[in-house]
Image (cartoon, rainbow, N blue to C red; front, side):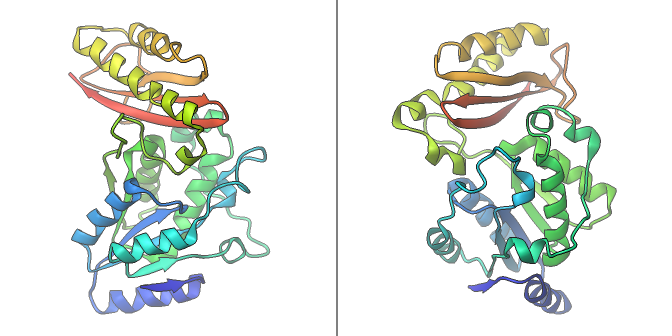
Length: 281
């Protein structure tokens, strides 16, 4: 496995493979890899001739009071996982390489960014859209894979690729969960043992919402009330948002549809958790 650190060396490697007619798969990450990332890597490995995983804690998607400096960076572990899964290149650029002196371009996707995560974290999606655009330009993949846990982010990236004709196929893969339902996330390692036990409450609220829909609930307010009542069972959980959305555009719903997205963010102690569940009637 190659470890490349500069955009120039990464672009040169990709250009050489493209000239040979080989397909390039790409899994962009911020490191602290877990089995959710592993599932994306394995899916890409099956579909492409060569595979790139980027490990880059992107500073532009963190707000001034967020956990950029504390974000986990277990690079030895991450490289070992990538080697074990047959990754060809680990792309590990520095912030200075990605955002050199004089850098000023910002990519935005306004409509998808305006609600939910975009409202809770105003800087976040501009940072995501900008870094993903740069990574696609450097790596030049044929296929890129993302997880459904970050549903709004995946929707933003699909819109970005379509609007800018970036020519990258986007595959959004199912959320990988722990046995008790907690969505796998690099930030789960911040949870204390007590908080870890409480953290499943978000998933359990979605289960309660799904059961209500399957039982015939028709209004979003009814289902949201049931989800909120479920979260209230955990005294350490604080709701940022719980909503029923149109899965196509993330607009809030008043009525349950044939396909309804349950979307939420809560805090357990100092840890912020996001998750979602797509419900079909």
